[in-house]
Image 1 (cartoon, rainbow, N blue to C red):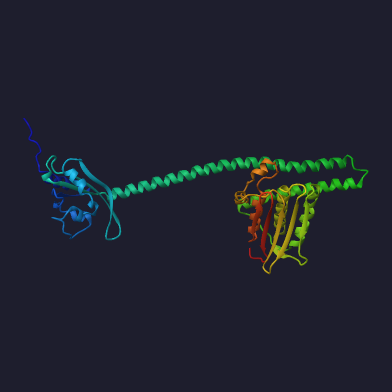
Image 2: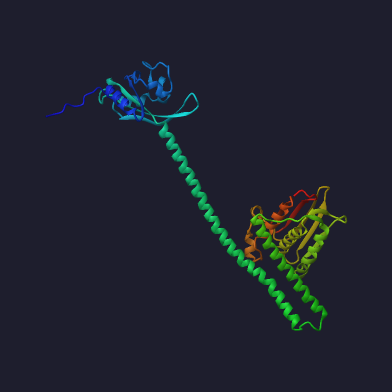
Length: 391
C-alpha cells in the first residue's frame, strides 16, 4: 500500500504552517509576484508589523517594508535559484509607543526552478527572543567587566601585600637604626668613655636625643598612617604659632644638616603667624617635609624654609637644591609607598610614607599642598593652611 504525497500549494501550506506556528510564535507571510509586488498576505500581516490600515496588495515589497529597499537584485537571485534564500535577522522597529520590536525575515522561492510562481516571505516577531538575547549579552558583558575588576583587584591585593611586606622589612630596619645608636651611645656613657670630657658627654647626649626624636617621628608616622587608613584620624585644633613650630623643627634637623654640610636657612616674618590647627600634626608635616629635603639633597647643598600670611591663610614652603623630579614622578609623588627610581638606585632610606601622610594631614586641616620640581635643580613643597576653625 502506497501513500500519496503531501501535495499542497506552497502558499496554502505556508498559511497552515503560520496558523499552527502562531500558537507558540508570532508568524506572518506574504506571497510576492515575480516583479516583487505583494499578491497575498496572511490576516495578521499588518498587525505583526504594527502598521495597521496601510495598503499592501499590489505594492512593491520595498514600499511596504523599508528593510527591502535596495534588495531587488538579491530577491531576483532567489527567484531564479541563484541563491537559496534571503534572510534578515533581529531587525528592530520602533513602535508608536516608542518601544522596540524585533523581526526576522526570510524570503525563498515558492517553487524551485519556477520563477513564475513568485516568492514566499515569512516574517517572525522575535521581540521576546531578542530582548532575552540582549539581556543575555548585557549580563555576559557585565560578568566580563566584573571578572576584569576582580582580576585587577586581585593584582592590586598581591601588589599591596608585597608592598606591605617590603614596608614592614624597611620599617623594622628604620626603627632598629636609631635604637642601635641610642643603645651604643648610652653604653659608652655608662662605661665612662666620656667621663673626662663634658663636651664629649654633651655630644653623646645630643646624639641620643636626636636619635630618640627620629625614633619618635617614625612611630608617629606609623600611628598616623594607621589612623588615616582606618579613617579615624583625630585632629585636636588649638591656636598655634607657625613661627615657633618651624623654629623648633629646624633646630632638630639642623644637627643632621650640619653633619652633612647642608645649609639650612629660615626666612620668617617678624609678626606672629597665628592659625587654628593641631600643633602635633602640623609639626609632623614640617618634620616629614624637611626630612624629605635632607634625604634628597647632597652635601654642599641648601634647604630654605619660608613662611608668609594673608588675612585668611598662612603659607610655608620648603625648597631644596637636591635631585629634583620629572613630571611623571610628580604625578605619583603622594601615592602610598611610592618611591622614585633614583631613590632606590642611590639607596636613599625611606618607606614611601612621608609625603602620603603630609598630604593627608594637610587636607585634614582643609589645606592644600603642591610641589614644583625640576631634575637636578631641586624641589619646592608649598603648604597653604586656613587660619580659621572650620574643619
